[in-house]
Length: 67
Image (cartoon, rainbow, N blue to C red; front, side, top):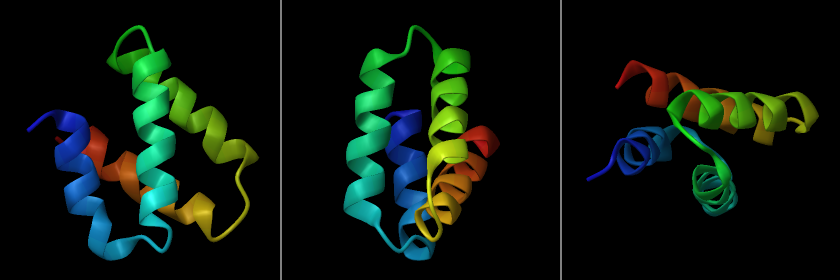
Protein backbone atom coordinates (compact mmCIF):
# COMPACT_ATOMS: atom_id res chain seq x y z
CA UNK A 1 0.00 0.00 0.00
CA UNK A 2 1.08 3.56 -0.61
CA UNK A 3 1.50 6.15 2.10
CA UNK A 4 -1.72 7.80 0.89
CA UNK A 5 -3.67 4.53 1.17
CA UNK A 6 -2.17 3.81 4.60
CA UNK A 7 -3.17 7.25 5.90
CA UNK A 8 -6.71 6.85 4.53
CA UNK A 9 -6.98 3.41 6.13
CA UNK A 10 -5.83 4.74 9.51
CA UNK A 11 -8.10 7.80 9.34
CA UNK A 12 -11.21 5.92 8.23
CA UNK A 13 -12.61 5.01 11.69
CA UNK A 14 -12.37 8.65 12.81
CA UNK A 15 -13.74 10.60 9.85
CA UNK A 16 -17.35 11.46 9.08
CA UNK A 17 -17.12 11.89 5.29
CA UNK A 18 -14.71 9.16 4.21
CA UNK A 19 -15.71 9.00 0.52
CA UNK A 20 -15.48 12.77 0.13
CA UNK A 21 -12.11 12.77 1.88
CA UNK A 22 -10.79 9.90 -0.25
CA UNK A 23 -11.87 11.56 -3.52
CA UNK A 24 -10.34 14.88 -2.54
CA UNK A 25 -6.96 13.59 -1.35
CA UNK A 26 -6.61 11.25 -4.33
CA UNK A 27 -7.23 14.20 -6.67
CA UNK A 28 -4.75 16.38 -4.77
CA UNK A 29 -2.18 13.55 -4.85
CA UNK A 30 -2.49 13.43 -8.66
CA UNK A 31 -2.09 17.22 -8.91
CA UNK A 32 0.85 17.49 -6.52
CA UNK A 33 4.47 17.49 -7.63
CA UNK A 34 5.81 15.81 -4.48
CA UNK A 35 4.86 14.93 -0.90
CA UNK A 36 5.62 18.41 0.42
CA UNK A 37 3.42 19.98 -2.27
CA UNK A 38 0.65 17.47 -1.46
CA UNK A 39 0.69 18.50 2.22
CA UNK A 40 0.53 22.15 1.17
CA UNK A 41 -2.49 21.45 -1.08
CA UNK A 42 -4.29 19.60 1.72
CA UNK A 43 -3.58 22.49 4.09
CA UNK A 44 -5.06 24.93 1.56
CA UNK A 45 -8.22 22.80 1.37
CA UNK A 46 -8.29 22.66 5.15
CA UNK A 47 -8.40 26.46 5.35
CA UNK A 48 -11.37 26.60 2.94
CA UNK A 49 -13.30 23.65 4.38
CA UNK A 50 -16.28 23.92 6.70
CA UNK A 51 -16.71 21.80 9.81
CA UNK A 52 -17.08 18.86 10.20
CA UNK A 53 -15.15 18.12 6.99
CA UNK A 54 -12.31 20.34 8.20
CA UNK A 55 -11.81 17.94 11.11
CA UNK A 56 -11.73 15.00 8.67
CA UNK A 57 -8.95 16.72 6.73
CA UNK A 58 -7.04 17.46 9.92
CA UNK A 59 -7.28 13.81 11.04
CA UNK A 60 -6.10 12.58 7.62
CA UNK A 61 -3.17 15.00 7.64
CA UNK A 62 -2.08 13.87 11.11
CA UNK A 63 -2.13 10.23 9.98
CA UNK A 64 -0.30 11.02 6.73
CA UNK A 65 2.45 13.05 8.42
CA UNK A 66 2.92 10.37 11.10
CA UNK A 67 3.75 7.69 8.50
